[in-house]
View 1: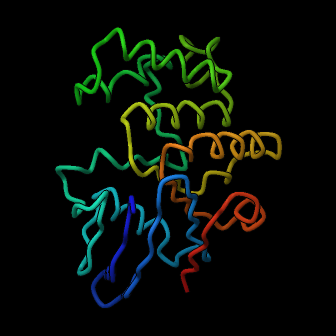
View 2 (view 1 turned 135 degrees about the horizontal axis):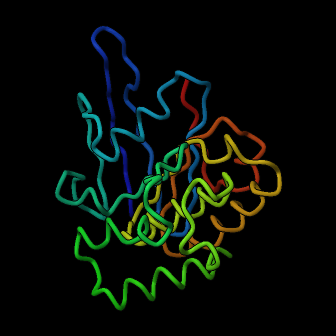
View 3 (view 1 turned 135 degrees about the vertical axis):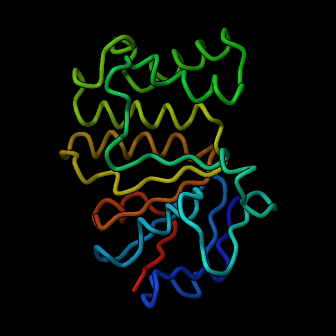
Amino acid sequence: MIFQAKNIKKTYGDLTVLENLSFEVDKNEIAAILGPSGIGKSTLLKCIVQLESIDSGSFILNGETLTEKNRTQVGLVFQSSSLFQHKNVLENLLMAPRYHKLYDDKELLSMADSYLQDFGLLDKKFAYPSELSGGQKQRIAIIRALLLKPLLLCFDEPTSSLDQENKMLLLDILQKIKKDHAILIVSHDEDFIEKIADTKIQLR
């Protein structure tokens, strides 16, 4: 099993956001966390990627407790894509893998080109985020996450700013990349989740 959440509890003062939450996601599987706004879906993702701490319970990644040490094996595609506006597409893609020394430069450039080709964005290699559509920005953010070699790839409300055409493109991309990854999606888009998810976890 690639990822397990075991008895997760998260509070803010007297407010309990998550309690006794357990689920698991394996390779070649897409799991969806569903629930209304404010129920704790995005908080859960922040806890998984160590942006926030949990009160009790544990996250297990590939048999090991998830900590700061192995956090880079979890990728997160933010709702806003979070690209650096003053850097072009290629520069956005190369920054994190270079920092973590995951590839030599020749291999990294080859991998970036390969993903850009697969995602239909090779002609945007030197474009800046301001020159991209919302769907294109999201695909660049997905490539950036994939270049960090994650075991688990998380998405925060991935369809929130997409039209129907880009939703279908995203669906195709997720079906392709799930072959090599465990995928966790936080969403309130039940129609999209019905098409894509292998497992659904409802937060109440």
